[in-house]
Length: 301
Image (tube, rainbow, N blue to C red):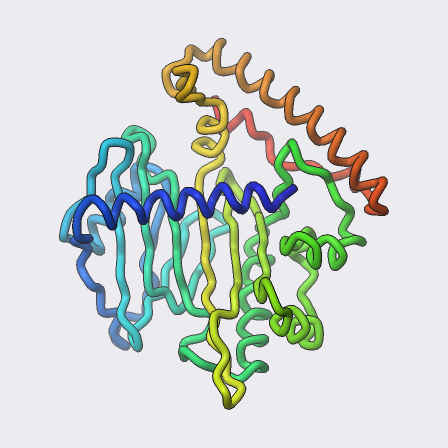
């Protein structure tokens, strides 16, 4: 299900921070986003991403055997605002306190970007303030035309079953459907979870967005964090084609080998989807056979 791919990005997140903690002390410059600086920090993927981070952060790069890292820090109350450049689907993110850009392959530039942000500017807010910030965020995401991404091995659950699927798996399958205030309160009052997850794509990028309630005070105020895990479809797919145990590296394959490996993977995941959809139908879910995701090969080749 979609949950296991969410776990994949959680693994990447932990993996990256493990290197930062065990390798050396982070040497990123602490950026003060003063009131005079009204423009968001522009961040690209690819080789331009290297230039972006260098422009905003003069303290260097953390290099490790498998990856290089670039980071930006913002200190409250002067939280940052960034703009992920992605053509018509560029996304502005407010109340940012940390950005980590990662490159696993120098020739491809920035391939993964993790952003931690507050849902609101204030650390603790009333429930209705948190809800309004969630509504505003999802309106921006939808206006930027980020669409639902269903991995080729996962069932294409119909949007009519959005609530039921979300309550079981924690992932929203209809990003255009913004929860009502009553639904929001119910979700955030659950014993476990207290979060809303999205997996979306646009113009060659994937993003996992997780909105989580992290604390609640005795006087009823709430604290939230929003985590964004971006990566390029090219990196995502080529990483899935690679196999370190069998010494298979998608980045060293010929074009013919890459095409064959990609088609083999798609055939395997299609069979997995067929099995998953049979199980979903048996559980009473409806299948959206009209769902069409991105053309993955155009980004892989």
